[in-house]
Amino acid sequence: MIFSIRKLAMPAVAGMTILGAGWAPAGLAASTVSVTTYHNDNLRTGWNPQEKTLTPAKVSGGSFNLIASTSLDDQVDAQPLVVPNQAISGQGTHDVVYVATESNSVYAIDATSGQVLLSNNFGSPVPYTMLPGGCNNNGPNVGINSTPVIDPSSGTMYVITYTLESGHQTFRIHALSLSTLADEVPSVVVTASGKLNNGSSYQFQAAQDRQRPGLLLANGNVYAGFGSFCDIDANLSRGWVLGWQTGTLTPLPANHLNNALASSPDDFFLTSVWMSGYGLASNNSGDIYFVTGNSDYSGTTYNPKTNLSESVVALSSDLTKVKSYFSPGNISQLEQEDGDFGSGGVLLLPTQKGSVHDLAVAAGKAGTLYLLNAKNLGEQNNYLNAQSIGSCWCGQSYFEGSDKMGRVVASGGGNVNIYGVHTQKTGNPSLVWQAGSAGVPDGQFPGFFTSVSSNGKKPSSAVIWAVSRPTDSDPADIYLYAFDQGGNTLYSGLTGTWPNTGGDSNTVPTVANGKVYVASYQALAIFGLGANGHVKLPPTKVVDMRVPLAAGEHEIHGLVRSMNGNLITVARRDGSLVRIDSTLAEKNSRMAEASVGNGLLARGTFDGTGILRANTILHAVKNPAMWKADR
Image 1 (cartoon, rainbow, N blue to C red):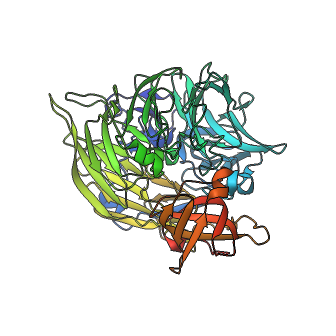
Image 2 (image 1 turned 90 degrees about the vertical axis):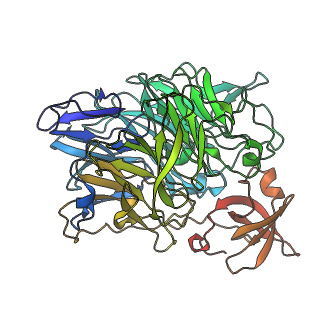
Image 3 (image 1 turned 30 degrees about the vertical axis):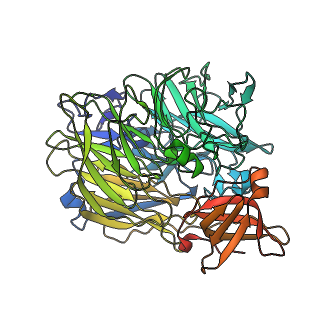
């Protein structure tokens, strides 16, 4: 595990690797903690084991509350990052929280007062109206969609922007100075080329490929994963993993194209890397770990050599070789039902005792949490242990208690569930349920994201933090929750709003140095002790994200009741049934695959028989309270 440790009132030192569970060496009791990457470290544990202030007793004692807030220019999908004792040009030295928004703005904010110290904008974002099919799985803009990564040894933040340049969608990777937020070297346009299985070349498609997973800094490189926009233009969009050298931003000689098929039955490719924003992972081997989503909905195109859809993948650091992979046994079903395994990320566990030292866990929409051997992921349906956690647009966390047992925090469905990692000298390790929480409100897709803080391995010092998703479109409030390791609720409080309910609030709380940071729609909330309850969140301005309709065109929401070929029957919010013909939407690659029991949004025109001839079909949440008005 990697933590950047800095002594108070002393010059910052380079990030150092702490072995095992990430404990600070003796004599660093007065140090403060940096959070420089998604979920705290490259394993993606989400664990800060050096939090002495936010004990369960203090969090539940009545003095923990909102202490500051900051107004931002757009929605934030990236996790806030924290660097203490950081020099800011012209502003002196501060503990700084860095926040990146979907308007391509990066803020350096005082980590206690919430004062904006510095900000910089890196170009016009891409408006939702220019996304394939008017993709609504986002806010009004797509700019910086993923969590950046900071190299504390060089004082550099790496970030990928999505800009509209001369009418064209463009990804750029930047290396920014933490002190000035200026480019240290010229930004580099993201490009890539891959070989298909018929020998032809396939080019990276900036207008169709979405960069959502958190960036990874490892092996002297920065890595990024790419997926799609709402599964629209699936004839063009394919998943990628790309890399650049730190410092120079020179692209790596090789890249990884997830789906190398030259054709598919429905002209539908994808095999995206999206993971609900969870970061690409890496361990001491230097291999790159990620999870892929669905490909052709015929359920027939999965292939370990040319299309590792619905799989956990370990990729060599130079991106040239798949080292190992794990695919569930029901891949065909997942493909046909849009049951993305890749809706969640892969968590690598710190080295464990017992027969298998290197472990990984991953879960997706199907709700099965798999325990895997990270050195040899097992290929198809070969896993160490599995638990049912509820459908997961989410990612796991990890911590250890005073008994030295590792614990996996799962957040599928609507609850926090804690599993002990049971190891043994012979035989397979397993996950054993220990405790669960009360429900965390969620009106969008199931699951949410957690972080964990603790005072080392002291008994009962762990606090599990979570952010709910909205349960209504107006008000679309989201809340910060805190639980002890027994699942008991310690705190809940309003932390922001998320009015663009078509796109999941994949919000990750950041815990460092006695404070909790939550970024949401146009706001950063800072929580801590000693609050008087009078601090308010800043006002926000909601943008109507419904795309303009042509004359005679309609837009409806519904729950899928049945599917018969291209004819889909849905129940609208009033219970009335409507039939939708998906032929045109499918022909023009404007269709996210529907499935019985799930929600959809369809645009099109009604014919004389009352059938909606859809030109676009998107996914929608199941909860009618989240739907915008039909029109």
